[in-house]
Image (cartoon, rainbow, N blue to C red):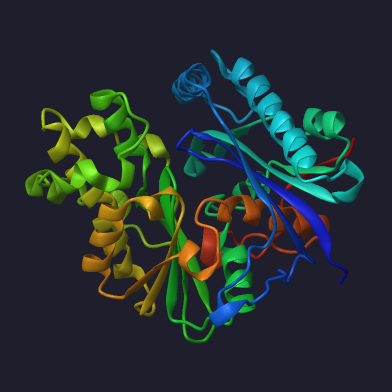
Length: 377
């Protein structure tokens, strides 16, 4: 199959901004280049459009309003305003990205547009990612594939995680064999486990950065615990951790997915800033270790991506609890920050070609299916 140039767009549950990535793929293979000492060269250029404080506040308010949603088409409260903003922010981000890299719209075959998740209740057949794919395609003059979770949920799947088929393709292109795991730590953490026979399972492991970020915002007015330094100065509350890990989610067999609102940073209650950060960071790490109860083979190597890969204390705890080789995506030439954006570019091409984007072993869907809604300018 011919290679296509695709842009992927991701705005995650951390509500920090829009990630942009350009890749070349035929929907099956991804183009990677091995450089010195087998270090992998980047797949393509990347970009970022951060959200201002008032924009983050709007998205938090919309997420709160989404709790009253009863049907997939519901848009209560500030959701319409937030949807218009998300569409505009993504359009501006792509326009700036194209200009910075000397690209024209005609050189891009498709855009994979995730949108902004405001609620995820797959058991109720509801998962809403706000953002208007048609408006984005019309403004940019580029075909857009959006609404990538709906078909999976309507076919009985969880609609998440969506990235594993890209993880597997990237691992194969990089020459990695199982058993190993790819751990993406965004607002929610998810794992892709590839066994020694090439089989893949995937699922959300539990909270990622969201609780830690919200704790630091409330206590210190900071967007995150930079490098995990605050957590490193504290002591986790072992009694609270033991109780948190009794949540029914951790006993469910995969595939399974998590709504970021199932857990709150307020669970840390009256702990000091340092102890609360230490507790929430330990919760993320121990939830990943707990997920190995469901692994067909225990990974001997992990590749960690997402914002959590920059949290030194979290990576230290993962090393301790997983007792395996831990490598950050950046250390091998993958992109910790833009892996999900790259994945949505890949998924858009697969959607165009009618290839499966979700599998029974990744979302629980009845059979491997494609997904996404294509809109043209």
